[in-house]
Amino acid sequence: VKVLLTGGSGFIAAHVLDILIEKGYEVVTTVRSQQKGQKILDAHPKVSKDKLSYVIVEDIAQPGAFDEAVKSEPGFDAVIHTASPFHFNVVDPVKDLLDPAVNGTVGILKAIKAHAPTVKRVAITSSFASIINASQHPETYSEKDWNPVTWEQATDPKDPATTYRGSKTFAEKAAWDFVEKEKPNFTITTLCPPLVLGPIVHYLNSLDAINTSNARVRDFIQGKYKGQSELPPTGTFIWVDVRDLALSHVLAIEKSEAENQRFFITAGYFSNKKIVEAIRKSHPELSDKLPLSSAKDDTPEGVYGYDNSKSIKLLGLKYSPFDAAIKDTVDSLLEVGA
Ligand code: NDP
Image (cartoon, rainbow, N blue to C red; front, top):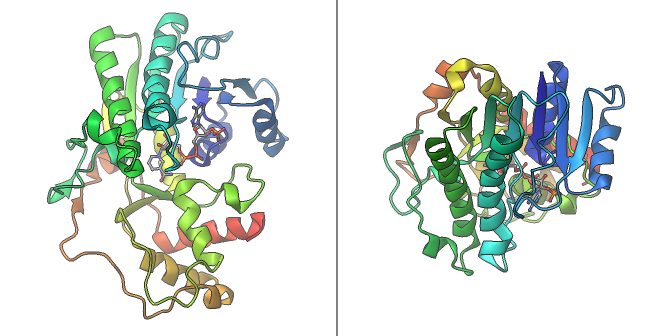
């Protein structure tokens, strides 16, 4: 079975790739440069060329960006689309985040429909960003909820967090619209994780280049809040282990129950306070780099609920514990060189 994985150089995609390889899939992954592609091949020296290769897609925002990448002989059976910018360094909201998210998602679906008739299943990395309603949290979040963000709010250059959330919301909506209007020969599955934590297995030349969601763990172990009595705000109070999320992508292309379904992929609550205490427990030698143990947990009383039962029931996901995820994250960061 042959899979096209977009954005193979990313934090989450690298874990998806590991699972695909372990399960014996043939994988072609898209990257933005030859150098990034070579790093992926170097990380898998035992995997043969016919099982793992890469193609270059420099900018997913461009029209027709995926038209060549989806063509393959023999054809792909499934596509996993993870590539999308996740950062808050926004100068131009449309160019930096909204276009690559939306055009990338619609672009790959169009390309598959036009050029890859063998593809039957497509999994797309969406986000809790497309579920959350930050101005009015419901009692419990589930797959039924949609972020009501407007294009006007998302294009406010002073609010990059809303731009990012808008980018994920509009991209996922565009994917469902595409399926409804175009009635393609494939089904889609969207995966909506909140903050994703876990070990890095992709190439990083330094911790300065760490992905956005793990940056807070790096900051803690590098002593950015050393000795402080207050923690930076947690933001979103739910999380998932990157390895569980990666597995959900592979199950999404394998299980018939996942076809045309949206999944909320979360293990449950966490906070920056819980990250700090988990680090203190697993790596006591880093204790003097951390904020004070008296620093308060900012989880609000009556924080919103989450319903992840669909992912457990239909995908059969089992969620991993928090402390182990933090331990493994820190170990992987120390290996890169904190
Ligand atoms: P990374 O930044 O590690 O991965 C993003 C990937 O997208 C990289 O491979 C990047 O390539 C690629 N990419 C971004 N913009 C473009 C572009 N214009 N053209 C081509 N490729 C591009 O982050 P994650 O692994 O965390 O993110 C992967 C997906 O998961 C995204 O869709 C993100 O929205 C989603 N997500 C992540 C969460 C998290 O907490 N980490 C939470 C919820 C959803 P390059 O590295 O070369 O720039």
